Image (cartoon, rainbow, N blue to C red; front, side, top):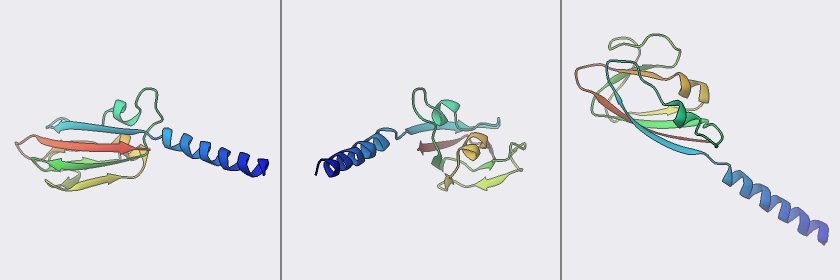
Length: 115
């Protein structure tokens, strides 16, 4: 009986440690004609484990983006339209994300990241 109780208590404590180890961050940034990406403080917050995934929604204006560290410009890269959601499922892609606006209007990108 004691062994079973010890096992249940161990599992419960392990599960609560996993919940406590969750990292959640949020960032809102403007996308102009200069390359911009998710801030390192959003991806690796101080005192927390780094995030693994991000999801963001584009507002205000269209942008182009890349994950491969190549140059992104107003006509080069993948197109993201207003209202589109960008899901990033690995930390390397999140860190490598670069965006530039396509027209004259500054875009806004709001992104949540988690582990």
